[in-house]
Figure (tube, rainbow, N blue to C red):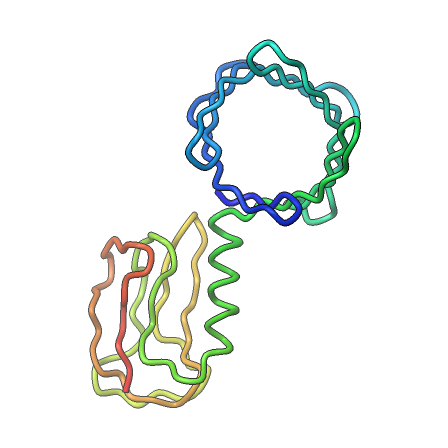
Length: 167
């Protein structure tokens, strides 16, 4: 997942977790940590014999935090797959020309609502995809014609895969 810490963007992956022992990878570096969450959002982290303490305050949406250490305060935002997906959908909304429908994340085709050669109206639903136990309805932004349907109902799809091409 992507984590924004102030102006820095880090790629963070949880490798393993057993009790307080946590192994994470931040960008290309792996850390073996001992992490204890105490009362009121206070976190104690032991790394290579050094102890670090931080107070973590969660925002209303649950994916933004303020982290206070002894000397600094950092805004932290977690950008998980769902947030990336929603951001990519919002970005697509600003595109002038839409020539394809694609899935920004892996999933499964639940239902195809159009046929090749069909003329569709702006906002018309074309395909339903299930990803992360949620179903998403993909729609066209402008009137167009369905050029080619590249998947079938029940297919497992990859992130970024083109599902339908448009004219």
